[in-house]
Image (cartoon, rainbow, N blue to C red; front, side, top):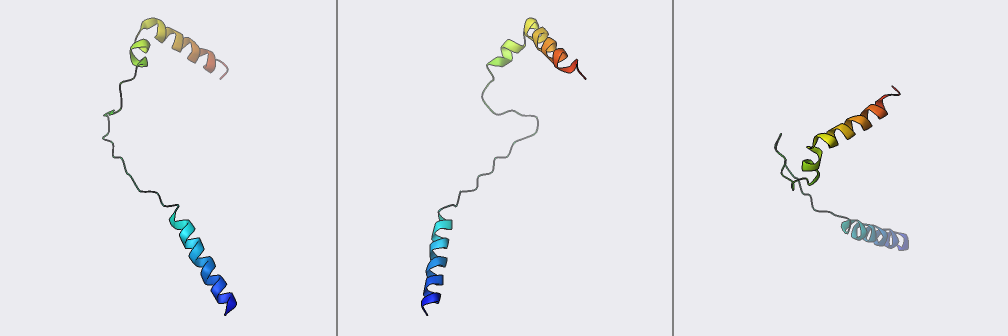
Amino acid sequence: MNASKATLTACVAALALLAGCHEPVSVTVYEAGEYKGESDPLLKAHAKSESKEALQKRFSMGQSDR
């Protein structure tokens, strides 16, 4: 009888501990092609031609070894 009480107590304790690990499920559904986040502050900076040139130069340097 003593072993079955210990087993029962261990099972109840395990269930109580596992019950505390529950996270609520939240699903976010996005529509294709529509960005719904905040506006990107870097978007205006990257629209400038000098920024585009700098990015193209960095890209070319990274791709030159291939």
